[in-house]
Each structure stands twice: as C-alpha cells, then as structure tokens.
Image (cartoon, rainbow, N blue to C red; front, side, top):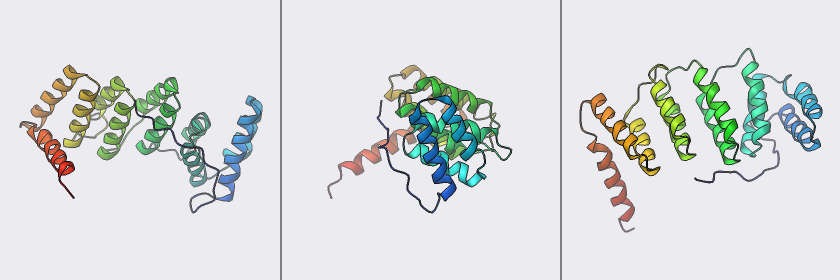
Amino acid sequence: MRDRAKNQKPVQRGRYLSVEAIQAVQALKRGWRMGNRESLEMAMAARVRRLVKRDMMAVLGELQSQGEALLALQVFEEVRKEHWYKPRLSVYVNMIIVLASNGLYKEVDQICSYLKKEHWEADIEGFNSLLKTLLEFDFTQTAMDCFRLMKLWESEPDDLTYRILIQGLESKGEMDLAVAVREEAEEHFGRSLDFLDEKEETASANECRPL
C-alpha cells in the first residue's frame, strides 16, 4: 500500500487562511495535546463553530494538509452540520487520504458510509479521483460500491473510469473482477476496450524513448 502520509507542518498564514482560521487550528491542536475531550470541545465551540464557511473549510484543509487526521475528522463532522453544507467529492477524497495515510481504516469506513448517503450532482472527474484513491488504499469493495452507485448519482462512467477500475483491480490481483468490469465496459461502449491496452503501450513506449 502506498504511503501517502504528509509531513507535519506549522500553521502558516497564507492567502487562504485568515487570522480566525489560524487561531482555530492552533486552539484545536492545543486542546488535542491536553488529551481530554473537554478541552477539545471548548476549542471547537469557541473557535470553530463561530467561523464563516470559508474559514471553516480553510481550517479543515489546513488540518488535512498537516496530517492531523482525527482533528480533521472532527472538523469535517462540524462542517456537515452547517446549514450551508454541500457535499464535495474533493473534500471526501482528501479525508480518505489523510485518514488512510494514518492507518485509521475504521474512520475511512465511517467517511465512506457518509459518502454513500449524500446526494451527489454529476461529477465524473471527482468520482474518478475517488475510485483511484480508494483502490490505492486497498478499499476495493468500497470502490466497486461507489462505481455501482455512480449512475444513481447522475455520473455516467467514462473511459477513464473503466481504465482506473480495470488497472486498479489488476494491480490488486482481482483478475475476475477486472475481467467483469472490462466486459461491462465493452457492452457499455459497444466496442472492444483495446484502447486501454493501446494507451498503456503508448505510455510505455514514451517512457523508453531516449532523451
């Protein structure tokens, strides 16, 4: 399994982090270091729940980028309670990455259970990123579940969707599943999927080409 854990970084004020967002991140980390639920809840109430949408999302993004997986999860839970909340696949993908990178697989399952209950608008690029991430972290069954649900979420699988799935399944040794997906893709497109093999051969040829 690929190690995608990120190095710990200090909070830095940038174009996307306001003073309020920085203070919220610092307060959460102090509360976490104190090791008791009450301190963390006080930080959440005093610093996070009062934030406007932009700042709360910035806090979530900063915690994700620092690899603060459990803190990010708690802020994500708060985000989902807000009246302005609208699900975004990029946020879910980043949550899966930070949790899985820290070995928090039960929490990934929790996040994925939320994901499956959301109402999604069409977003092929987002779903392709989701499938790729789930396969990279060995959540094969969850990837297949999301693939099956894509049509219900108004996102019709495209060439890249099938390529991600087939190559991901083959890399995990799930050959029977890969064959089934390939057959489904050929039926869906009404043609052979030789284009997948052609793209792979072209990519390999380009890699071998002398500079």
